Length: 501
Ligand code: UN1
Image (cartoon, rainbow, N blue to C red):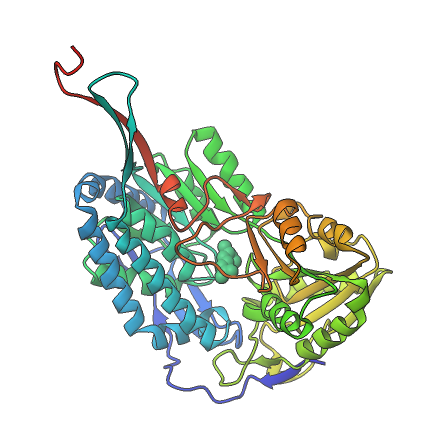
């Protein structure tokens, strides 16, 4: 049974008094006058992290018109000047990484080390887009006509709606907002209702860094507010990360409006452990992929395919590692896995596991049961591994929690077919040292991100990130790929007068 570190372990250096939340609208921090809402700690749901008031439609209208008004001037501001603001915001994030990383852990539930790491990662993303001003901004083509050149330039799109999920409260917003702003767009941002505090921190860093008023607005509210933002007549484009069901409805809304939309949605990512794999390495990576952030990453490893000859040995190793994880207070030293984001998420995940365990062909290898210890009254779910004899909803449905479903494969062909057997196609990991297998996996797996001998999660700021199949819609994120969504090309035919005559 997984260890419980308990919620009473000592935590250091973070004031536990509730913060007050504010919206950022047209350059002003405002309390708002909608209904009051509480931001609670998933580790101790009776503890309030922050208190705020929901944004109302009037706030939304003002934020969108501020974004429209600020756009021409911001778009005309030199890219290098915009970049310097992103750079300064990165410095501010780095300077507050310990404090804000602790708040992230308190608010969202991932471990403090992961929280601090995420704040630093956001800083790195901002720096990447800050330096983008020094990279080429377009292309020049030869013309079939004499005396002419054809230039392809990139222009910002306008006022962009940014809607972000709870699981990376600062990194995902950074990788949407930094390229949006860097390329000259203005932004109205609606973060997930469960993580408003870290949204305020990122906005604060950008404002302190010198972002002009109206260029970024932050509205705190529920999903319905996000829906109204996406459909607001003043919005030019929409970028979203979150569930597939919400993503699809935003895509439909944007389709009706002929509005560009980029969505990053679900995953049910497989790790494939083949007979020649380094099993120790694979076990460490699969545990990290499945249980870091309590499995709440769209890139998390939620399926495992293991080749028959090594299956018993690998599953024994994996189960041992998973059950040794110390689960408990995410702010406490030594905790490996904190709670999931809310009691409601815990119920949904536990219910799906319970239903699975009641079905034939579903074997529990470790975890799977609710904690009965009072110290674990927060949103804790045990790191869980189940083996499936065949087809089962636990193989298909994204649970967004620390639950790994395993199937065995006879050979490479069957292993890759099982890995690909999903409506999603975000990421996959293959553990092998055989170059033929690497080549086959690269060709056959329909995923946006493939890892050889490393976990399914992770993304670097300078390379494209995004999925295949139902995992994504629209252009990829990060790196140069981001430019595709956050700019439009303009093709300019340049001919000196009289040149062709
Ligand atoms: C990562 O694996 O580090 O929502 C990033 C998510 C993904 C980001 C994953 N869009 O989990």
